[in-house]
Image (cartoon, rainbow, N blue to C red; front, top):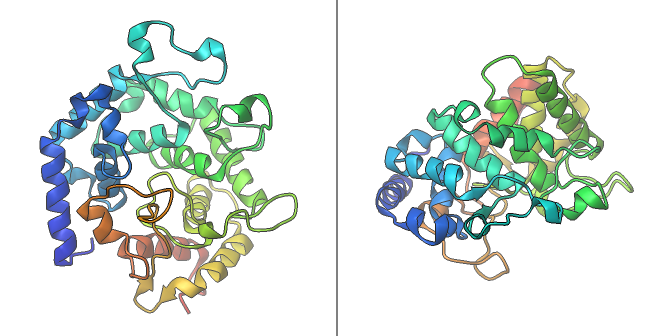
Length: 305
C-alpha cells in the first residue's frame, strides 16, 4: 500500500465518514452514490486500493441491506420491466457497471452474495450482447446491439475475480466472449475503422470506479488467459504497453487522468482520499502493481524499459 502520510490520514477520514454517515437512511440511499463524495465512492476507492477490509463492518452491513431492499432488481429495457407499486418506484435503478462495482466490494469484504443475493450475478450474466460486451443504455438491447467498453469491464471483472470455484459453462462463455470483445476492439479501437474510440482511455486512471482505461482492459485479458487457460494475446498486450510507455517511469506508472473534473461536466464535491490518490502525473503504486501483473504474464523479456 502507498504509505505517505497524506494518504494514511485520508484513509482515516473515509473510515470515520463511513462509520458515521446517515446517507444510507436518506432518500432510499440515493445519496450513497452521489458523485463524487457518496458512501459508495469512499468504499470503492478503498476497494481499488486493496484496503476493503478497512471499511467499517457497519457500513458494509448497510450497503448490503440497501442492495437487498432499496434496489430495483431488474434492468429496465422495456415498459414491462418497470416497477408498478409506489414503494418499488422509489427504489434505486442500477446499471451494469455500477452494480458490478457494488458486488465486487461486498464480495471482497467476505460476503457470499452469490448465496445471499444471487440476482446480482444473474443480472450480469444475463445482459451480455452478441458482440461480447454489455451496455448500460437500454436502447442498445432494442436497437444497436452494440456494447460499451465502460459498461463491460466491471461485470467481466466481477465474474473473473470473484469466482472461487470452477466456472460454469455460462460463466466461461461470458468471460470468453468478453475477451473476444476486447480483442476485436484492440482494447481501445473501433472495429469499423481501427481508430481510437476515446483518447482518454489511453491515459491510466486511478481510482477508476466504473471508468475504463487501456490498462484495465489489459489486466482483464492477462488474468482471463491465466484463469481460463487461454492463449495470451501477446501482440495486443505489447501494443498496449507501447501506448502506455509515455506514462512509465523507473518508479512506476504515472496517473494520466482523473474520473472527476472540477471544471468540467464531471465536477462535484470530492473527498480527501479521492484527491490524495488521484493526482495526475503522480506515480501510482496501485496502477504499477496492476501493470506488473500484466508484465509477469508476458514474461521477463517485457519490462518498463
